[in-house]
Image (tube, rainbow, N blue to C red; front, side, top):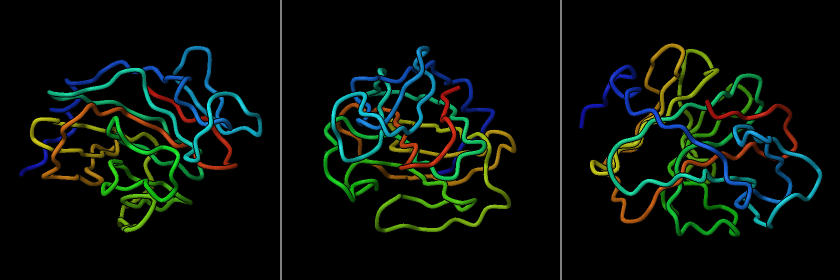
Length: 179
């Protein structure tokens, strides 16, 4: 399946807001519900995964969103199926319903947990675009500044709602922002 170019998928941009009710206890969400960062405070409900979902979910069609990742040392982002077990560690991969990439110390990986696959990029992205074609089973990640394709999951079989999610990672500075 060919991957669409960035300009053609940006027409499917959606406005997302973070859902504080899904935030792990150590995450703090901005008042405008667009930024999240890790803290040492317990703020919301308990989950072992330091992640937060958006209020919006998708069960058909196509959608695109961007995440500012500039100045982040580590971050995991992508989409998760509605029934994903957020209290179980080791589930940040497509086998368990997280279609995601991980940025860590200028390196980019497919999946955060096994199997962790390193990607060779010219540079670490500053802004990542995520495109999902629910009906075609496609999740693509782009460097939104250079329009380069970072990685695509193809042949996915989605059967439930998908939620965009962010995981700003443990004890790393910097806010993660939906654009």
